[in-house]
Length: 502
Ligand SMILES: Cc1cc2nc3c(=O)[nH]c(=O)nc-3n(C[C@H](O)[C@H](O)[C@H](O)COP(=O)(O)OP(=O)(O)OC[C@H]3O[C@@H](n4cnc5c(N)ncnc54)[C@H](O)[C@@H]3O)c2cc1C
Image 1 (tube, rainbow, N blue to C red):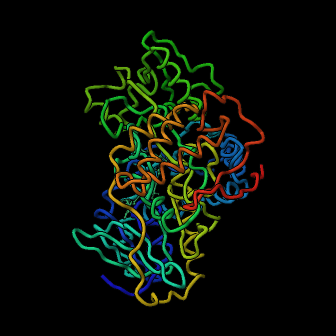
Image 2: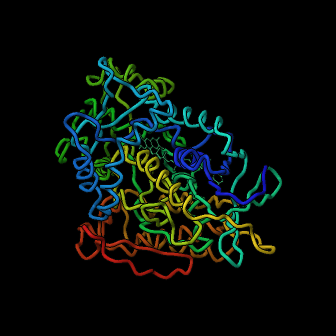
């Protein structure tokens, strides 16, 4: 374990590993809580990576689809840049060795997912895209001498001296270790583990947000949490995901009477995720059971096209070609996060964020399916370029105080957040949740996680409208005057944010 100052990445999912590979041959340190490739949502990505590479497609179409589902809060410049770089992202991953699925003619096989007007989802080993990409990236990282990877290192605080950020404090077993760094990249993934029903690993507890908040960085659009409509309702955490690509291959939503209750949505079962999740939520509230019916399509083809999902269903005694699959919406993705520019730079000098922990402006109020792996790869390269240009990386000055950041997890939080930040919210439940976390944030029980939760709920209260993934039953309309972002930091003041350019 070296103690020299060098760019330091926290997190070993697709965002962290790609940033490290793009920074090499610059010496770089990678801190990961588990063995490399053992934890993170990246491993579980099923659908694939969106890129306009088909003969009938173009990046501008991909950009239009992204903006169409983003609820008026996408940053068009960011969207155009990332969708334009999507073919590069696929080429780069393929050049690193990812064996993307191809047709008989050697062309990339393209899947279809909700909100996409074209087949443009590139996948690998059927629905094992995330695992396949991660295996490739891990082997590249292990072979790259410029990357020092440290496993079992959990970042618990960012450290500052008189110049600025100067290191990361980690817990490694029983020990606390400080790693000097003037350029720090948070790539810690999502937040689903803070909710009672999620498709994320339960360890995804927004630690990067907590670290950034404690250090003074700005967070943005926290209220936008995407619920995936079709998690397998098996009553234990995390809920296995039934990818949207299954609906892309013809599966439909039915209730216990066999009625296709979502058929009237624009795009039917392939409407945007917020709409499908809302339709399922409403139908369940009305007392119905909800199932995914894949018996006719993809039918017998299911096991071949979706081998992982098929194996999961079989492990619960369900055969998708024969049985209806019980489904429910579950927390899947956080559109909000650490506010960053197109190069992954946060508001705090020396701090970058890449992947799900960051909010670049690509997704707006609602993420288009399979745009997150894409965002992670494209933004990793941009962040690496900006970090390279930011040196020299000076050693810390004097004896910096202990870093501020994560504290022990608060077990009470998932119940509170799930009650007030569900598919459908209202003022009453949000105010109740705010009171509950406010008490905890002031005491020792909730600590830093409660502080984050307080800002989160306050953002959902502040947005007195419905937009994208944020649906308020007491404010069901979208209001033009709310077409703006909400930035917050540890000062607990609302920060000025310009209306978004749509
Ligand atoms: C079931 C499922 C299916 C999905 N399918 C798709 C899909 O088909 N296409 C798509 O585009 N997106 C998909 N997504 C979303 C996508 O997978 C994620 O948004 C993306 O993988 C996030 O990558 P990441 O690198 O930011 O985070 P992750 O892959 O979650 O990695 C986070 C890393 O940070 C580490 N970490 C966290 N905190 C600390 C800490 N304090 N100290 C040290 N290390 C830490 C973790 O151990 C992990 O290594 C899916 C998500 C899920 C859950």
